[in-house]
Amino acid sequence: MKIFDLSVPTEMSPSEVEPVQVEHIDHKQTAAFMASFFGATVDDLPEGNGWANDQVTIRAHAGTHVDAPWHYYPTCGGARARTIDEMPLEWFYGDGVVLDMRHKPRGSLIDIDDLRAALDAIGYTLKPGDIVLIQTGADKLWGQAEYFAAGAGMSATATRWLIEQGIRTMGIDAWGWDQPFWAMKERFQQTGDPSVIWEAHRVGRDLEYCHIEKLANLDALPRPFGFKVACFPVKLTGGSAGWTRVVAIFDDL
Image (tube, rainbow, N blue to C red; front, top):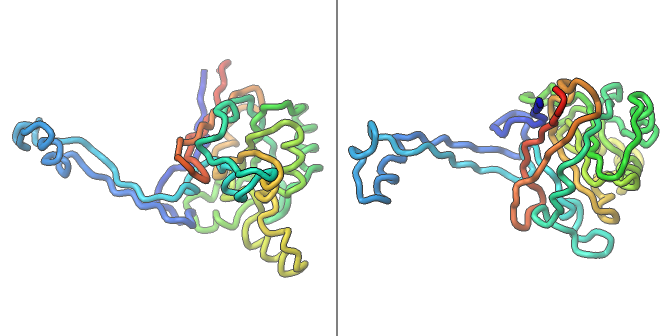
């Protein structure tokens, strides 16, 4: 068995629009605190060492994460949208399939025809419960400020089509599921149509689904299907998203 990491690091990075602050607290800094639990002194601990710890300040949408329906809109199909802790665990483990969209220009929309062409190219037919991973190549800019504006993005019609095929969890190796913000702004300024703003996310107003943002390393996978994906989100009570260490599992390697 071989497991591939499909996540970006959780770190302070020029790629993160929402800041991440990580303070590493070493063994010496915690020694007195640890000793206090036992009525001991620092001298009672091996070489005066306590435990290592970390203080992290982070938003739920930093790093590789799963968006919950609650993120998209307060309601879904007329009912209260579910938060990340309320989503079925079964949604986050299943057969994976990578659809290569690296040929799509930066800022462009991925539509239904693009998805169908990618499926035809690899000879794969979607089935309910598959986890679809969209490869734009934007992950190669991780660590640079340009990452935020990179990659193509999903259209509302393509997102809806995936859901209609029985796909409940899907993901992308870019900053967001939609087009980059600059591309959405251009379309809005040109058309005056507010429906182009966050159009793929807003599909969640009517149809329930989850998507993963900030995937990475899809190019490292030896084939585009025939593997399992595990992407269980952290159980953040009432959360609009949950951080996840996404992995692809190949049992035959």
